[in-house]
Amino acid sequence: MKKIASGLSTYMGSVFEDICKQYLWKALKEGKTEVGFKNIGRWWGTNPKTRAQEEIDIMGEDLSENSALFAECKWTNEKVDLSVDKVNLKM
Image (cartoon, rainbow, N blue to C red; front, top):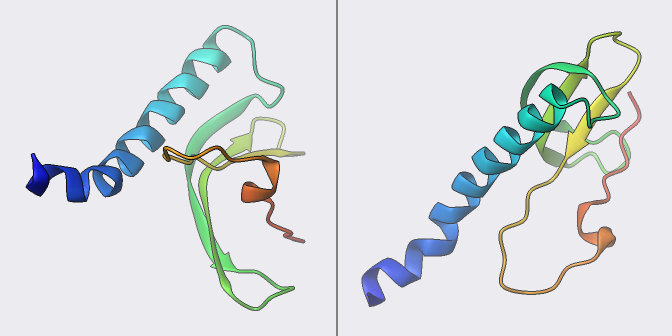
């Protein structure tokens, strides 16, 4: 148990991201999303404001190509608020 427990959060992070993607596909199929995305993937690159590397767990391209879906997936045992996922990107 001790051996597994030390790496569980790292493992569960990617599993939780997959669960979030599945949830979004289900919501899209049921017409419950504001963005009608056609694919989902990750995004990473340089933030032009901070000039630091940023990663966004989920990005969905809109079918109309006028908007996009951006989402962060956080696996943690601690409470978080909206400030945890604020990334200022100007494209």
